[in-house]
Image (cartoon, rainbow, N blue to C red):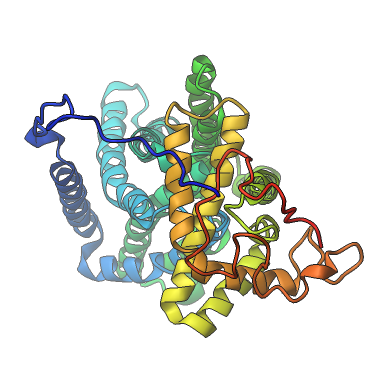
Amino acid sequence: MATSPPYATHPSGPTGGYVFRPKRWWRRKSVRYGALIGLLGVSGLVILALVREQTGTEGFLVGLGLAVLPVPLLMAAFRWLDQVEPGPWKNLVFSFAWGACAAALIAIVANSFATRWIATTTADPTHADTLGATVIAPVVEEIAKAAAVLLVFLFRRRDFTGIVDGVVIAGFTATGFAFTENILYLGTAFGTDQLSGGTGLASVTAATFFVRVIMSPFAHPLFTVLTGLGFGFAAFSAQRHRVRRVLVPVGGLLLAMGMHAIWNGSATFGEYGFFGVYAAFMVPAFGLLTWLVIWTRQRELRTVREALPAYAAAGWLTPPEPYVLGSMRARRVAREYAAHHFGKAGARSVAEYETYATKLAFLRNRGLRGRAGGDFALRERQLLFELWRRRELARPALGYAAREGAPGYGYGGPGGHAGYAGYSGYAGPGYGGYGSAYPYPAVHGVSPYPAYNPYRS
């Protein structure tokens, strides 16, 4: 009979040989979170005051109302990319807040200072704005946005495991930055129209809205995603490749600065310079990066289908689950089934099961490639335990999704496993349906049921 996985035991003795030392106050999680929230809050208040001072109250409200329009669409797009292994919302909230508050404050202060310095130290002050926009702004703004990606990469490393994570964190940061910047530009344009009497489609506000919100809402996310890709490749690289893990993010940041500079300088390329850069440079780059990210998302699903069968063979998962978990459609079917039969709590439990199973697949994939850390075994058992806690609700839902047809498994179809068509629980030794009598299986590919072949129809 199978026994429970060998978890580490407690040290012997009354204190186990350890002396309890409370954390220093500045190392406590509550203190660090409080300081971070305070920093972002103060930055938000300061940037709010600065923008309102430049646009006026009425202009600020108009700019705010127009700037918020593309935000839900951009956030939904990046969240869609993150569906395979959804990251914690707190990381995304932090990234958006950093972009909208801290990065925007750094940019507006540094850009203003640099532009004034150029105007007072160069022989031709009329070019100060152009130099500031094409040289200073791309460097300052991309570094300010990259800081959020770096912080998540360093301090939330467990949640930052690959390319998609870098893209999503960078995208949320840039979306927040663009939101604040659009308030400033749209509010200023509205003030200009108030002074000049511009109205309708001929107004400066309409032109600014068309260029920044309709034509190029993806501009800032596109730049910063290059930095996110660099950090994503670094997260995916092995620990021993230290030089690569440093140079690739730096290279991504430099590319982001270069693309940003070309975009900002497009207005100086002649009457149709903006449209030329937009058509010949921005749109192809956007299409290429979109293809890369979607390809990476499909690659993640393939990793799930390839890595999880080892745990199915060991008895931790049922045989169809790797194929169900490797299909976004099948996952959705499983959640809908759980919501219908077990309510919102059941659907949430199935969603958590899917997330933990995906994390487990990625962890095993990194381990097979020699890219997992020293805590691989501990992390693996933690994820298996989380799956085990949710199995009684998740397995019927995933089984229903398997009957509906999971890619690669072909239930009832040509080459499929018709013997599983009923799928109402296994009758093999030790399974007994989905009851709590199911014992802990072994791990690392050792099946607790040597006489039972779970793949036999």
